[in-house]
Image (cartoon, rainbow, N blue to C red; front, side, top):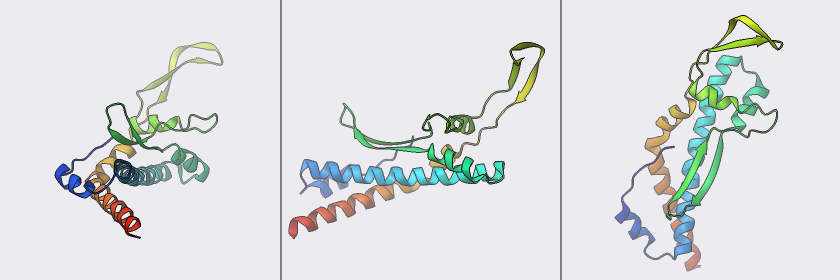
Amino acid sequence: MSGFETNIVEMFEKFRDLTAKEMSKAVKRALNKAAAQLQSQTKANLSTMIKSDTGGHGKFNDRLSDGVRRVGAKGSYDEELTAVVHVMGTMASGSGTYRLRMLEGGTKERYAQTYKGQPLRKPRYLGQLKPMQFFKNANDMIEPQLERIYVEEIDKTIEKINASKEA
């Protein structure tokens, strides 16, 4: 998860004429917009990495990209609003999105200890997955743009609210 800093005095100036509900709406909308950008960048990175490794098997790519989820802006007990993008997947039966965590972080070397229920004398080597870090790369790539997206969306929302008040 990434974050960014903004000038709080400038934000208070923008929020001066709004009610608490309107402020909350503006911030939530901006957080959701920034999280959506991170989600789309993550899906794009995942898609390019999977296509190069699997030869572009469409159904497999679609199922894995469905596992990149976004949780909308929510408030917590300490009044902090957050929007989260995660690669946990759907965990639905047959979806295969449990693989996302292994693709992101890689795995250690794996060995089979049994074959058809019978123990093997010498464990059989199954290999290891090298970390692809599609989520980390997307986060690093888009993080400088998140503050700009956040501030622009707040400005748009405040303009819409002020226009509706004047009309």
